[in-house]
Amino acid sequence: MRIAHVITRMIIGGAQENTLYNCADLIQHYNDEVLLLTGPAVGPEGDLHDRIRAAGVPVKLLPELRREIDPLRDWRALSKIRQTLAEFRPDVVHTHSAKAGFLGRLAAWNLRVPAIIHTVHGAPFHAYQGRGARTLFRWCETLAARRCHHLVSVADAMTDLLVAAGVAPRSKFTTVYSGMEVEPFLEAHQHREAARAEFGFRPEQVVVGKIARLFHLKGHMYLIEAAKRVVAVQPNVHFLLVGDGVLRGQFESQIRQAGLADHFHFTGLVAPARIPYCLSAMDLLAHTSLREGLARTLPQALIAGKPVVSYDIDGAREVVIPGETGYLLQPQAINELASAIVALAKDQALREHLGAEGRERFTDQFRHETMTRRIREIYQETLRGGAMNFRAGQGGCDNFP
Image (cartoon, rainbow, N blue to C red):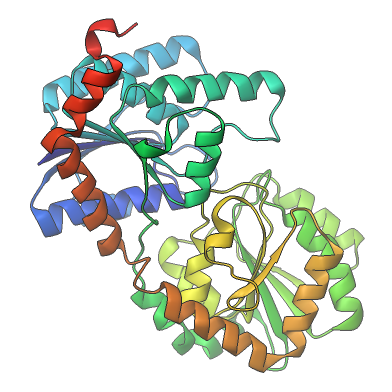
């Protein structure tokens, strides 16, 4: 097949790694012709462009494609996407992220691309936005959903959310969990002593990790608040924050004010290949974000044999199973978060049991080869007839606004 992937930016992040694995697998395992369209990877998160080149994925960089809303620049981006797709003549256009998902689907529909697929990594509208922004983004997502043939959700929770919002009927969705290279996580324990020595942890200390950008809605402040209660009863507990971002100074200040500077350790920006190494230093993972599709760090930690304490948001409950792989808590809960961490910090046997169950359940499910095989089947199913049925039922490019 000839397949174009469109994504706003290839920063270090779950949606971006998902897209990179998909592109590389299609080329290496199926001999497909792939083109990745993306905007500049601006921001403090780092980028995946070295890995893209190493994987041999052809890239078309579109300077006009940016995350921020700018009507004039966005119109130019739409024009450039359409021009690039017209030249490439793909059988399939597969879009990712809010901005590229909207513009890419409109451009592909206008060109009558036979199969247009969009992956919902996370809903662009959420409860923490103002009403106007939420209404606008829901309208955009609904319009774009009518300009594609199928929607792939990274978790059942994403399907439930979009169906409830009236974006598209449930029949138009398929869940395909994000793929990753699982072997480095299965082997993470081999680095434990070296990693803990590098980060300054002693053998008797229990390390709680969090892997996320230091950014809004990632929930670091709740972990810091909970840490006050944890350290008061379990002074051997330390916290490892993996990642960087614009809020680092704010969190460092909050930690100092709480008198916890000796208990928190920052890694700074970490390349994805180093995540298993960082996980090896941890005894459990805390996930306190307020919105995610299905954060990759959850199955990554479980595949590495680490139990998880997570807020019950979006797709978290699909891998964090109370009493079996970790603790699932109400979002923003502080006391419950502290209690769960203390319970795991006190009980090594419980940590090992929950981690082993997570590894057993999710290793094969989250292999990137599994993800790509299922997505390619969706391409084939759409090309075999789904696109024509969709056009017949809902109108085609002739009534494109």
